[in-house]
Length: 108
Image 1 (cartoon, rainbow, N blue to C red):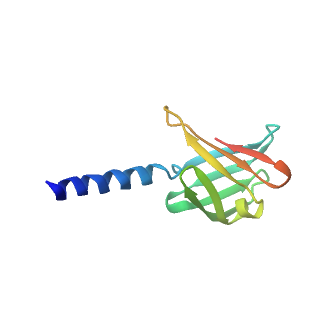
Image 2: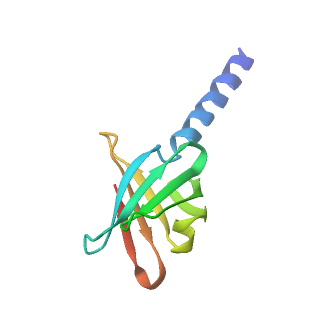
């Protein structure tokens, strides 16, 4: 009975850890005034691509701990953006990022 309980506990821990990484997808990013900054495409394992409002595209990688997002490389790091994400009951994910001088960016 004990090995079964241990295996179940490990599966539950692994499942909850996986659920904390932001879901892959395409997210439109705007500043606090609603001005389009570009499009964030998030892939599995933290890889992402960001296409700015002028159409220039670059890629990078983000790390996630719980709901915190920390860009390790690429344009989000260059813009010094970091923040949090959340997914509601309908599966809609929103990223709230903050940069230098209180620059607020929302990607959804």
